[in-house]
Image (cartoon, rainbow, N blue to C red; front, side):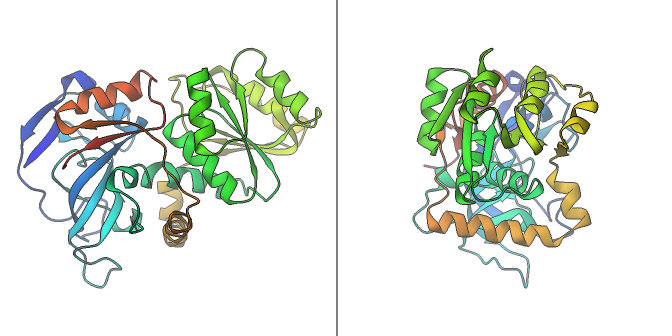
Amino acid sequence: MRAFVIPTPDGPSAGELRAVPEPQGAHTWAAGERLLIDVHAAGISFPDVLQGRGTYQHGQPPPYVAGGEACGVVLEAPPGSRFAPGDRVASLCLWGALAERALGLPAYTVKLPDDMSFIDGAALQLNYSTAWFSCHRIAVQPGERVLIHGAAGGVGTATIQAVTALGAIPIALVSTPAKAEIARAAGAEIVLGSGKAWLADVRDLTGNSGVDAVIDPVGGDDITDSLRALGVGGRLAVVGFASGRIPQVKVNRLLLRDLSLVGIALAPFVERYPQIAGQLADALESMACSGAIRPVVGAVLDLPDSARALELIESRQALGKVVVRVRS
C-alpha cells in the first residue's frame, strides 16, 4: 500500500511516499484490539510536526508512517466492540494515518453522521476531542465568556464550536484579518486581534471584569496577559505550545484573584479515569449529529503532497484544519 513515511527526525521535507506492508496486529496503544480502517482522508495536527522532528512525547521512532488521524471505513473491528465492518469512522491513531490502511484506537474512534464527508470527518477527532476535553476540565458553563487563543487554527475553530455548543460565549483571538474571517466562519461573533492592545480590548469588552476562562493552544509570551484577562475565579487551560515557546508563570498571579491554571492532557486522564473516553465519544457523536460541529477545513492536499501539509502546520500558515485526501 502507499504511505507517507518519515525516515529520519528531520521534519516534513524528509518525508517520502513509499510502498509499505499493510499494518498487522493491533495498534500498540489498543490493548490488543485490532481496528483496521480503509483510509479515505487523514487529519494533520501540530503533534504530527513535533513527532516528525523527534520532539513529541508520544512519538514513534523513525522510520514510521506519519499522520495522527484516520477517517474512512472500518475493515476489521474488535469482537464485541461498538464498531463493525462498513462503519464510517474518524479515529485517532497518533501515527500511521497517511496510508491507504491504518490501525485505529477504538477508545478514540467515533462514528460519522451520514451527511458528514470523509474530508470533514478527518477534522473531527483530535481537534474536537481536545476542545471538548478542555471545556470539560475547566468546567465551562452556559453564559460564561471564554477567550480562545489561536482561534483560526484547527483546535481553535473546534473550540469556538464546542464552547458555543455548551451555551458559553467564545471570544476569538487571531493574528490577521484572514484568520478573523476563519474564526467568524467557525461561529465566533466576537473576534479580536492578538496585537499589543488585545488585553485592553478584552477589558473594554468585559467592563474590566475579565473573562471567565481562557483556552490556549499557542503558549508563548501571552500567558501573563491571559492571566490578567481573567476575572476573579477564572480558569486558564494550557492546551499546547504551537508558538514553539513554553512560558513560565509566577504563581502569585494565581493567588491574587483565585485563578486556576489547568494542563490539558487527555491520554493520562483517560488512563486514570477510563470512563471519560466513552463520555467524550458520546459528546462528539451527539454534537456532530446535531450540527453543532461543522469542521472548518482550510486546506486539502493529496497523499503525495503530505510534506506540504505538515509544512503548513509547522509554519503556522494553516487556516482551519489541514486534511490529506488519501482516496478520491
